[in-house]
Image (cartoon, rainbow, N blue to C red):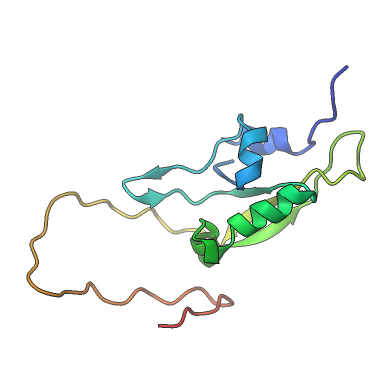
Length: 142
């Protein structure tokens, strides 16, 4: 006898959907592809998977808060999180967790170009200020 299955997850996972898997979810979902990081630049995930409402959700959400230094610190600046209605087949009232689709504020952006090499600078230098966040996202205090 097979157990209940997450209805939309096969579609999401089959999209090749880079995902932000919160800490407790990673252990139970080894077949899902987490977002990649190359040359110090993170791939923007398309989905976020949150644990169920047991103690796992509290731990995962706490661990993944921006103040804890998690990827949500930059994901919240880049994308809006939209709940994807989902349930376990045959268990529609069971809280299995939550699936969020991440909708970029600027969907047509291109990845940055990576420049490799060395640069010699003297004394104290700064490269300048970073840009402001998208509308609706509070600006960090500077």
